Amino acid sequence: MKLPFIKGKILLTQERLDFIKNTRGGSSGVFAGGLFWILAVIVSLVTSKEIASIYYIFGGIFIIPIVGSIISKISGAKIEKSSYNLLVIITNMLFAFLYPLIVIIQSYKLDYIPSTIALINAAHLLIFVWIHYEFLHLILALLGFIISSIFIFIFPEVAYIGVGGLSALVNLVFGYLIYKSTEKPLSDYNYKVVDK
Image 1 (spheres, rainbow, N blue to C red):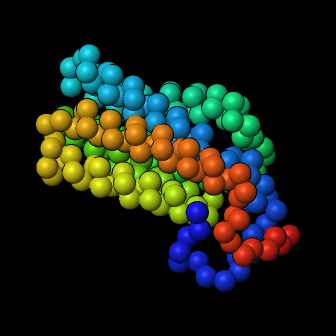
Image 2 (image 1 turned 90 degrees about the horizontal axis):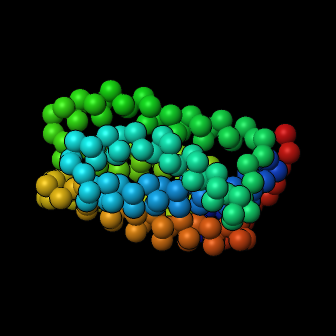
């Protein structure tokens, strides 16, 4: 889906166009995030907030890369050598750099952990708007912000189920929409491929 604030022709390298095509717009990671959130709800239903908070904080480190790789293989997405891979890795490191903040929040108020994770997730999605020229990533990030805000300011006592459940639904829907939008990547744009 075209970014409404980009007017006229865009110039991009063949490497970037190939990256967008090969990764299917990052849909595998969004689907993997959906599974993370589903498991977060399940863990929250069957354990205490203390244990569920540990899953929320550390579960994504293991689940998202593994499940994302499996979904990539199933969906036909390819991870080939590209300078954009490094940018994706750096973007995902946002979580690692914010772990001290998450631990402080965990010791202060357990109810804020799901919303904090959802906010960090939403923030890290913003770079994918630019990487993939995909408006759906921006909408997904904004929905993450809205969901987080609702469960911080209005319903913190049910955040473990609410944030996880709504985020799972949103991720699965947007994973599908992003995947479908990359069947013809950048078809909404007037673009020109330029080589260095």
